[in-house]
Image 1 (cartoon, rainbow, N blue to C red):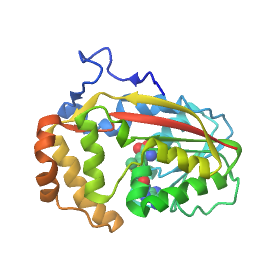
Image 2 (cartoon, protein in one colour):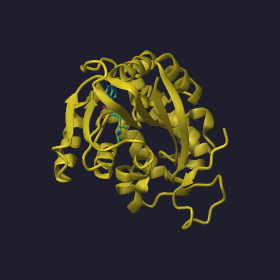
Image 3 (spheres, rainbow, N blue to C red):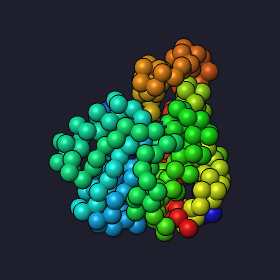
Length: 274
Ligand SMILES: C[S@@+](CC[C@H](N)C(=O)[O-])C[C@H]1O[C@@H](n2cnc3c(N)ncnc32)[C@H](O)[C@@H]1O
């Protein structure tokens, strides 16, 4: 499928189609919080309506849910996550934005949703399927798709944003996928695998769209991200990671040469329940 990507920074960077620029340290500080407007843009692409009750799986710190809630002032979102740390941070962010009446939070495993069938008009997930792979493996991602299909109403939408490794276009993007899979099993499946999971769960893919930030991490920024994962994943999820030294031994020289992708190329998939 030929896609015309929505490219951030297109007008401000003098880059050829395949190039990416390093984030400045100032940009890096809070880059993940809004990915330079990417969440807002993705939220605007999802066919949701006010009054709907939507499930946000792996809500993390709540950034995507807040974009959806701000775009649709009468929508109600229920956000679930397996991590108490993430939910605490989401709670703080949601309260700060004055959205606590419209975004509820629950500690829950996406592979076993404690909701009756057809409880939601739709579901969203913005990044996180790689983390569900980290905590529950391929079978967990598969169960998650079946659970989503069960809890949304017939003709309801499920949108999810991913980084299919086989579609990466730059070394930095390839490295991002390989490095976090290596550290802790935070693995992205191929686009085809996600499509197969949709199909077997009773969901039809209706649209996909490509987004690029055209930004990547410097060596020092990459080290910070890797150190964070090596330290926090065992603490939060009780999952053993590779040591930082081992990661650097394997990937350091490539990162020094190419930089490390940082959500640089994302694909939105929109599916609809049959
Ligand atoms: C990258 S964050 C999500 C980002 C967020 N959606 C946003 O807009 O920035 C991924 C989240 O997945 C959560 N997670 C991992 N395994 C999970 C599981 N089995 N069930 C629910 N959440 C899970 C993690 O705790 C983490 O908070």
